[in-house]
Image (cartoon, rainbow, N blue to C red; front, side):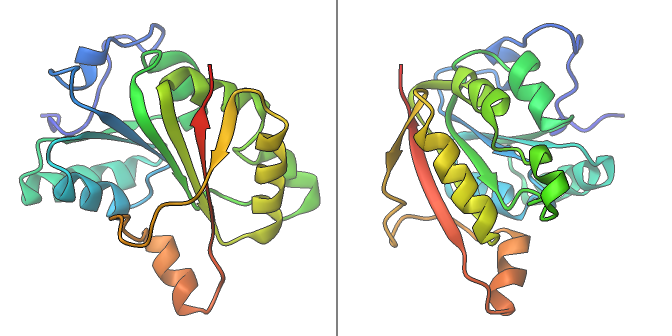
Length: 198
């Protein structure tokens, strides 16, 4: 029997309604794109019970672990979707559904010949823009300085977003599993935040 935490669309070839994700569409919805082992996703859901959270993760094993953890924690405001993030954002999720989208430590594809595979590129930015509600926020973190510089430059050229300062230190924003690893190794963490423009 499928877990109620896992989002299993009836049709992967049409956009979901907001109520297909969570029953109350008036509650803020945040997306964790490429949510990994769910560390960040679950901590956010625990800390903000008045918000709903959807994690998107392409690896089925990770999705299973997240659903089990969410059930053990008794969280009813978190769901996870086992799908490629770019497809989910561009074709499946409702337009304007998310108050915030988090892209935290995506694969940096460090080799020059692979850089075109990085997630922050115009097609995906257009999909993020469509998924965000008016004035919604896109938050990005990476330990990979060249990727960060490229992402900031790409967004600077985009009319879809305007830059904002990063969160204040007192604002709750838990570490991901990758961030914990990189900080333990003494790596610098780069963070940026943008707002959807209309």
